[in-house]
Amino acid sequence: MPAYPRTSPFLQPHQLCPDLDVSGSPAATQHLPGHPTISLSDSDALSRFLRQELWAADLEAVASRLWILTTPSSASIHALHQQKVLGREIVVTEDPRLHLVWINNRIFIKPLPPYLLSYSFWMSTFPQSPLLTQQWHIRRAAIGFLRTYRYLIQHESDLLIAQQEHLRLVPVKLNWTDMSTFLADLETVKDGDASARYRYGELRLSRLNLYAPFLFGRLSYEHIPMQYGEYFARLYGPILFIFAVVTTILNGMQVALAADPRRQSSNYFLWKIFYWFGISTLLITVTVGSSLIALWFGMIANEWKFTLRNRHRAKG
Image (cartoon, rainbow, N blue to C red; front, top):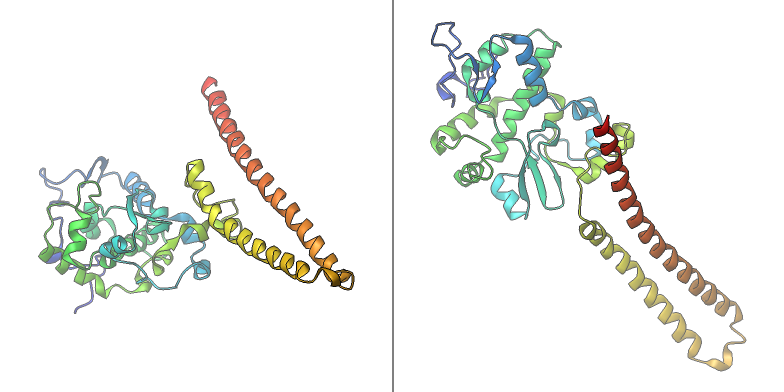
């Protein structure tokens, strides 16, 4: 397969959005496809828009350390039908920071904008961008983002999922023949052609949040609000498991002490250990219960703090 042109990751005959006309004629397109308020003649505004839409600043800044969070492979992306098999709900996001980030049974995916499917867009917007310029970085992010769809859509069933009305990850007018031909061109795209973030695939949000203080200098990467019941339900399993183990140990101790009451005096040291273990378990139980209650009150207090702060701002 021939290498892709210098400024476009796919061949012109395989483009999926041929409507963009940048010839300069009176009939030429005046705005970015899918975004009627973004003028193609305003290069500064266009550059700012593309950076906002495609550049995941946080992840790009720490890309060299993302290996501690996930497999360092750009192909570590499940196809859309596999996401369903894994029981994940596909959630549409327009934030490039959240593209391919998943938590529990949800994965966030950014729709593929029509302009990235246009050969004319690539040729006119990134005409041999000089190295290390903002335009060069945006182009590499655009290539990396576009390549993720090569893994997300691997079968016709994936395309049908992407075109579902509540998702619309790709234009509904596309057919599988054209889409598969287009995606085949992206096989020539290497990791070195994409920005650093897109040398990795899916990222687990729980790990991003865990390492956020070290990677991003803040408490979390992205806070996903949850209902109280859902939040505490995540704690039930580990807590119940710990208490089940401790209860089993305590029952075993009780049986050991009660097996031969006449020898309890000779096993005073063992009895003392069991006694203090029981007292410690009781104290830990009270502490954990108190902590959960304090956490619940803390969440309520935090909500009131947020509400009052917004009310204060509204009053000016």
